[in-house]
Image (cartoon, rainbow, N blue to C red; front, side, top):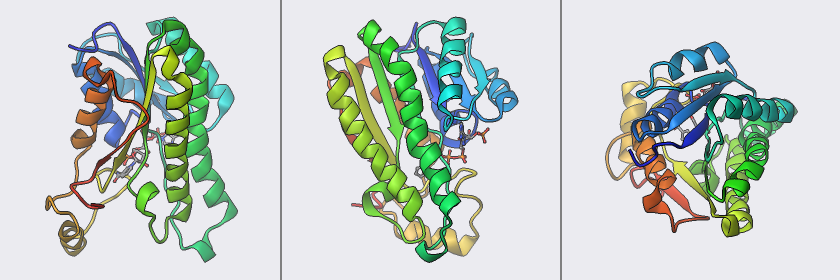
Length: 244
Ligand code: NDP
């Protein structure tokens, strides 16, 4: 129960990797605020987490006003938030020549500006507490690049620069900021693969299997806790060795 008495906010906490992260933080004793655009779903999933007092709220992280308002509502209900996981993310994949303006803008607005909106809304509180953890869920494609994902890869690479800058800026207030770069994790985002596609993918992964949301959540739990108290500004890959 290393996160007992702490309040954590997880964006995109209502499905996939974010839901596993919410569960792992709740298992560690934190009170969790689950965020998704679909507030009913977020509330329903919050109610299934272990321990009590978890809350689900509807919020589009791309909208700065909604981000500020959501943080206010959450802190009124649950107290000061000292752990933020910027996990909400979307894809709008296409080859460069077919990528539309809105595909570029939407991905940037959610994946990169969304993280900025939530981090800015929570920074003052964390600085006052002199205690905070910010974890940004980026992607291995933000490091390696990927054909057909130039918008997504750019947003995830941007998140790495954001992570390192925030880490430098807030370290003197005991606020740590790290990034986690998952490889191929089985969720709604990656969709169902047929047997042949799964086999091809597995051959590219030294550990020989696709990742699970729990593989990512375990690292989030560690980085959010006191055992990671001397770690900031880093990017951790969780990909079964795919981009060694
Ligand atoms: P899912 O599509 O399964 O879930 C996305 C979550 O984000 C949902 O809870 C969704 O809820 C929420 N969300 C989406 N848009 C917004 C928004 N504008 N505001 C608030 N919440 C939003 O995604 P994954 O679990 O697969 O991915 C989670 C993160 O991990 C993403 O950042 C993704 O880029 C990253 N990642 C995933 C990998 C994978 O293989 N799955 C690999 C590498 C990185 P709602 O629909 O209600 O808004």
